[in-house]
Length: 147
Image 1 (spheres, helix red, strand yellow):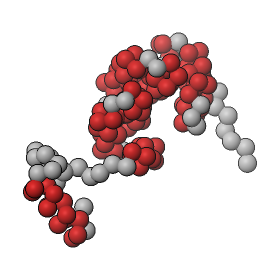
Image 2 (cartoon, rainbow, N blue to C red; image 1 turned 90 degrees about the horizontal axis):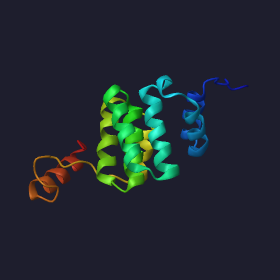
Image 3 (cartoon, one colour; image 1 turned 120 degrees about the horizontal axis):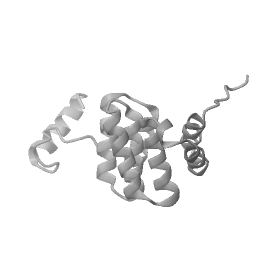
Protein backbone atom coordinates (compact mmCIF):
# COMPACT_ATOMS: atom_id res chain seq x y z
CA UNK A 1 0.00 0.00 0.00
CA UNK A 2 1.38 3.39 -0.93
CA UNK A 3 1.59 6.19 1.62
CA UNK A 4 0.11 9.55 0.82
CA UNK A 5 2.80 11.90 -0.37
CA UNK A 6 2.37 15.33 1.18
CA UNK A 7 3.16 18.19 -1.17
CA UNK A 8 3.61 20.89 1.45
CA UNK A 9 7.11 21.44 2.89
CA UNK A 10 5.42 22.18 6.22
CA UNK A 11 3.83 18.75 6.32
CA UNK A 12 7.11 17.14 5.27
CA UNK A 13 8.86 19.02 8.08
CA UNK A 14 6.45 17.70 10.69
CA UNK A 15 6.83 14.17 9.38
CA UNK A 16 10.64 14.37 9.45
CA UNK A 17 10.73 15.95 12.92
CA UNK A 18 8.54 13.21 14.37
CA UNK A 19 10.81 10.58 12.84
CA UNK A 20 13.81 12.19 14.52
CA UNK A 21 15.27 13.83 11.41
CA UNK A 22 15.34 17.37 12.77
CA UNK A 23 17.93 18.55 10.25
CA UNK A 24 15.74 17.58 7.29
CA UNK A 25 12.73 19.10 9.04
CA UNK A 26 14.64 22.34 9.55
CA UNK A 27 15.56 22.42 5.87
CA UNK A 28 11.89 22.04 4.90
CA UNK A 29 10.80 24.71 7.38
CA UNK A 30 13.37 27.22 6.15
CA UNK A 31 11.89 26.97 2.64
CA UNK A 32 8.56 28.31 3.85
CA UNK A 33 8.11 32.09 4.16
CA UNK A 34 7.23 33.40 7.63
CA UNK A 35 3.79 34.47 6.45
CA UNK A 36 2.93 30.90 5.45
CA UNK A 37 3.60 29.34 8.85
CA UNK A 38 0.93 28.49 11.36
CA UNK A 39 1.54 28.07 15.14
CA UNK A 40 2.10 24.33 14.82
CA UNK A 41 4.86 24.79 12.28
CA UNK A 42 6.40 27.63 14.30
CA UNK A 43 6.69 25.31 17.28
CA UNK A 44 8.37 22.65 15.12
CA UNK A 45 10.79 25.29 13.85
CA UNK A 46 11.67 26.12 17.46
CA UNK A 47 12.17 22.45 18.26
CA UNK A 48 14.44 21.92 15.24
CA UNK A 49 16.49 25.04 16.01
CA UNK A 50 17.06 23.85 19.56
CA UNK A 51 18.09 20.35 18.53
CA UNK A 52 20.24 21.18 15.53
CA UNK A 53 21.80 24.56 16.36
CA UNK A 54 21.43 24.85 20.14
CA UNK A 55 19.57 28.17 19.82
CA UNK A 56 17.52 27.58 22.95
CA UNK A 57 16.47 31.17 23.63
CA UNK A 58 15.17 31.65 20.10
CA UNK A 59 13.50 28.23 20.19
CA UNK A 60 11.74 28.99 23.47
CA UNK A 61 10.49 32.30 22.07
CA UNK A 62 9.13 30.59 18.94
CA UNK A 63 7.39 27.91 20.99
CA UNK A 64 5.88 30.44 23.39
CA UNK A 65 4.63 32.46 20.43
CA UNK A 66 2.99 29.35 18.97
CA UNK A 67 1.38 28.53 22.34
CA UNK A 68 0.08 32.09 22.60
CA UNK A 69 -1.50 31.84 19.13
CA UNK A 70 -2.88 28.30 19.60
CA UNK A 71 -3.33 27.61 23.33
CA UNK A 72 -5.53 24.56 22.69
CA UNK A 73 -2.98 22.69 20.55
CA UNK A 74 -1.24 19.97 22.61
CA UNK A 75 1.58 19.56 20.05
CA UNK A 76 2.74 23.14 20.66
CA UNK A 77 3.19 22.28 24.34
CA UNK A 78 4.91 19.04 23.37
CA UNK A 79 7.50 20.89 21.29
CA UNK A 80 7.97 23.49 24.02
CA UNK A 81 8.63 20.67 26.48
CA UNK A 82 11.13 19.07 24.11
CA UNK A 83 12.96 22.39 23.76
CA UNK A 84 13.05 22.78 27.54
CA UNK A 85 14.49 19.27 27.89
CA UNK A 86 17.15 20.01 25.29
CA UNK A 87 18.03 23.20 27.16
CA UNK A 88 18.33 21.27 30.42
CA UNK A 89 15.19 22.63 32.12
CA UNK A 90 13.47 19.42 33.16
CA UNK A 91 10.92 21.07 35.48
CA UNK A 92 9.67 23.41 32.74
CA UNK A 93 9.49 20.48 30.35
CA UNK A 94 7.41 18.44 32.77
CA UNK A 95 4.98 21.34 33.23
CA UNK A 96 4.66 21.72 29.47
CA UNK A 97 4.05 17.99 28.97
CA UNK A 98 1.42 17.94 31.71
CA UNK A 99 -0.31 20.97 30.19
CA UNK A 100 -0.34 19.15 26.87
CA UNK A 101 -1.98 16.14 28.53
CA UNK A 102 -4.68 18.37 30.02
CA UNK A 103 -5.59 19.58 26.53
CA UNK A 104 -5.40 16.24 24.75
CA UNK A 105 -3.65 12.92 25.14
CA UNK A 106 -1.17 12.35 22.36
CA UNK A 107 1.12 9.31 22.19
CA UNK A 108 4.19 11.53 21.74
CA UNK A 109 3.59 13.27 25.08
CA UNK A 110 3.00 10.01 26.88
CA UNK A 111 6.20 8.63 25.34
CA UNK A 112 8.21 11.68 26.47
CA UNK A 113 6.86 11.39 30.01
CA UNK A 114 7.64 7.68 30.13
CA UNK A 115 11.21 8.41 29.05
CA UNK A 116 11.52 10.81 31.98
CA UNK A 117 10.06 8.31 34.45
CA UNK A 118 7.90 10.82 36.27
CA UNK A 119 6.28 10.42 39.63
CA UNK A 120 2.73 11.45 40.24
CA UNK A 121 2.11 14.90 41.66
CA UNK A 122 1.64 15.37 45.41
CA UNK A 123 -1.84 14.62 46.80
CA UNK A 124 -2.04 18.10 48.30
CA UNK A 125 -0.26 20.36 45.79
CA UNK A 126 -0.04 23.29 48.23
CA UNK A 127 2.25 21.25 50.50
CA UNK A 128 5.76 20.03 49.67
CA UNK A 129 6.11 16.54 48.26
CA UNK A 130 7.99 15.26 51.34
CA UNK A 131 5.44 16.62 53.83
CA UNK A 132 4.09 13.77 55.98
CA UNK A 133 0.46 14.27 54.86
CA UNK A 134 1.44 14.01 51.20
CA UNK A 135 3.53 10.92 51.80
CA UNK A 136 0.98 8.99 53.84
CA UNK A 137 -2.06 10.07 51.82
CA UNK A 138 -0.20 9.07 48.66
CA UNK A 139 0.58 5.63 50.09
CA UNK A 140 -2.98 5.25 51.36
CA UNK A 141 -4.62 6.23 48.06
CA UNK A 142 -2.18 4.06 46.12
CA UNK A 143 -3.12 1.00 48.17
CA UNK A 144 -6.80 1.74 47.64
CA UNK A 145 -6.13 1.99 43.91
CA UNK A 146 -7.28 5.60 43.71
CA UNK A 147 -3.94 6.92 42.46
